[in-house]
Length: 255
Ligand code: 13P
Image (cartoon, rainbow, N blue to C red; front, side, top):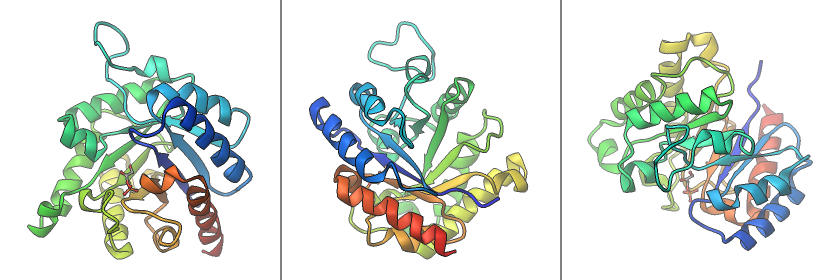
């Protein structure tokens, strides 16, 4: 079975509630009728309800950018899977910004992935090496270890997603080459195969993220191992994000 491409928008810490509503309305208007691509919007927590409302009854799905690994209790400021499960189909976990600014560990990612899965939310587990790790030939080892540990507690579910986001390509305007991205996504699939079996690994969507635009998306999604993208900056412009979704649909139809 061919994998349906998936394009996810990571709005990061951008948009007020009013801006999120407007962006969601515009994006949904532009992409809801695009077929052959799964589309996910991940707004800040505070706007998830409004974005879910804007997307309700359409083909556009909603995700969160993070969550805590406990389901409820005295964890001031945190948001749990129980709170997200009615609104979100996906949750981004272990984004490089969370790993670097908030000291998120692979063990925390593994715990969060399990709680997401138990609550019917599909994890989008982010992995990726820094520039220094790539320069010192450690990219493969670092990413393989992040995948192994990130998936250590979950069981196989074909709906789970992994995103390869090299830290040096995130927000830099300098995307990875499609060759490197494809090779790293292949490595990720191999790691998934080692735990879940290679046939199961073939069903999992692996995304590329890092300076994706409507101009370069076709070069990524036409590669064998790359099943879509996690889009940051370009997802804040409705027309540009819609063009990324449309170009993914046409690239997928061309293979
Ligand atoms: P940019 O698309 O802005 O490089 O961000 C990528 C990213 O971090 C998506 O999660």
